[in-house]
Length: 231
Image 1 (tube, helix red, strand yellow):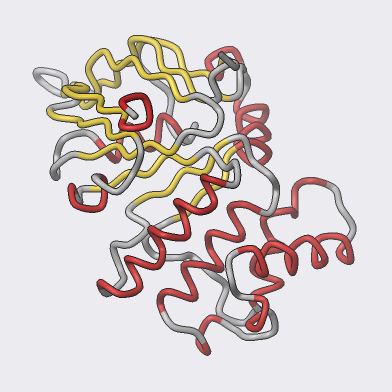
Image 2 (image 1 turned 120 degrees about the horizontal axis):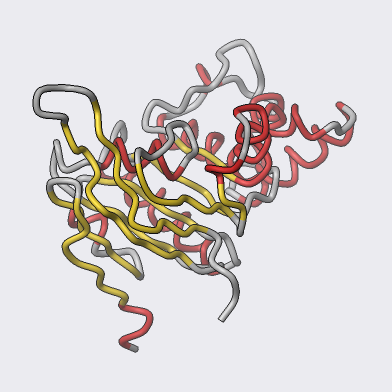
């Protein structure tokens, strides 16, 4: 088996209080290259905290987080930021696109910290937009696109740097049912092409369409169903 691209070892995250609030409680989780994992849980289950820990936006109170084999607890803040920009692609519910930029330039922002020329960034951006089915929208701004198209641009931005893992936070949360279905189909296709994806969602129907489903409750992992292994 290949080395895990994401590994959490007995991770706990507490926040100050009387008594302290334990948002994540002893989570151990491993994600292998090429997996598509949905982390599902109700509001207050700890999903947002776990997202921040996986994405290296926060550090655990106890335990270890490894991204692509690198233990983040041993890194300085600047080194963690470098690891995050190079090895994690983010997809957010709110898209977070720049209104005045074309789709090509929005996607190219995903390469700003990799030291590539503007020409090379734009070429890779265009290639990735074609990969998500938006080759015909390269010159369009977000205002000229539907919600589903904007999320495809956001997915392309997450993919363009060839990250070890794509972290998707409620990627269909702002979409209607038709566009949600298309985004899930796209994520499954990208996974079949080799992308490793971890999706955070409260939607159990959505999670049921993903090969591996991990359930979170009160900060603890309570279930881990891997359909790929059962086949």
